[in-house]
Image 1 (cartoon, rainbow, N blue to C red):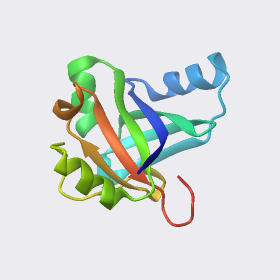
Image 2 (tube, rainbow, N blue to C red):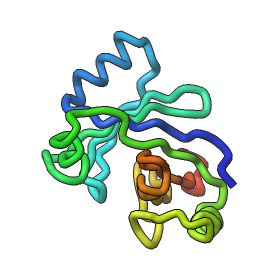
Image 3 (cartoon, rainbow, N blue to C red):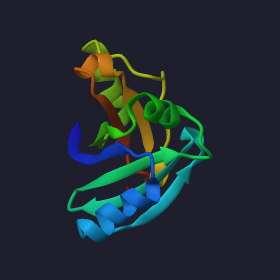
Image 4 (cartoon, rainbow, N blue to C red):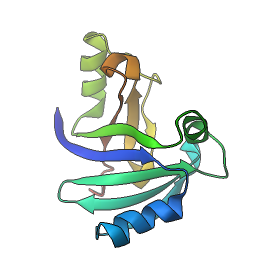
Length: 138
């Protein structure tokens, strides 16, 4: 079952400038950056009660976020919903006809298990589902 909005991700062409915007201009708490080698992204998180805004930027100038930025120049990239049973949610949503970008979840930021639903299944919005690691950190 989906239990919360985990984060909203925004693809940004200039990570440092975007971090300053959310940290200094908007005054949000900043929990730091993390490179996710498997996704070829650098991420920066700004946790709000029960959610975060995630900034995603190409790691070493490559990967799917680089292609997204080339095409769109920045903008909202995806919504992520936290799950307490990711495997069950994937089965349930596949039965409902949702298409996923991969067959199985992979490991994303914060060591969460993650999987993405194809935007064609969600009116053009890329949706991520994640399940926090067993240590409770999301």
